[in-house]
Image (cartoon, rainbow, N blue to C red; front, side, top):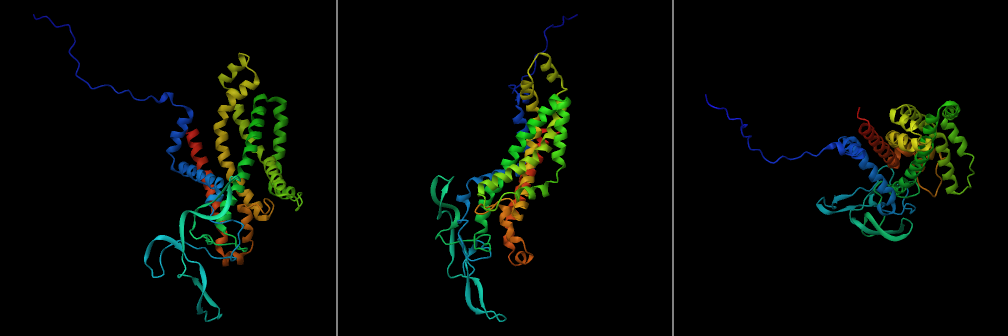
Length: 379
């Protein structure tokens, strides 16, 4: 018999082993970001929110004109054109102002108004225009996109006083978003604090606190908004009126956030690691800040992105009624006061342009909140 070779057969030659990156060490923020990138609606909302914030911060630079400068009232929009008067294509964009022609209307015998093809206004980027102070400190006169000769250009037309609608809408984004972000910040701080404290301690304190929350939720908000805002006299300074509106919106809006956070806290207070922290003698402050707050923040962030559109719509509605912002401040709701009559809307439909900004803001924050909700809790 032949002796069997005890040595094992040689292993086949293999290439170098490449270690795969382990995702177990991925942070929670990186995990949420990776999930959010899979949602095209969430990313579209994120980019729109970034563009809206940039527009509000750099409003003077992005606005083609001074929002307080007056021109012809209810002038129609001037759309950029790439054709000259003969219909030939030109590389330099331009607009044609309206002017009276030599022809007469056969019915009214008034001069026919049409584009002035003989005097085009060339457009360009980073051109000189109305002077302003960037951030209220830096003197500048450059505008992102306007006419090169400094002549007025109205891409979205003018209102009844001849003020540029696009410039006013860009400046109005600053006030509307500032009100929404401030109100939601106050609502979040008060609602999250009250909800966590009430849900954590429970007992009689929770009972009385929830009765107060129910009392706030029971108020009919819209009539109360109108009643409280009428308490401010018309002659009050603009800043005082604006601060009062923010306080009223915040005082009536924190209760719903508090109820939601309380429900999360009641579930978290019974989890093992919270009971273990209580058993080892951790203080209530440490348990709330170190164990409960980080676990409710995901819900709070999503609730914030969904609450901002609500405040924007409320401010626009109150501004339309004249109860939110007073001149000389500009907001989208205040601009919509010109649309109070159907005859004006039918004749000059471009004054509805602020509605587009409101719709874009509502869609942006709702889409971002929807994407964040799926990224935070995919199950």
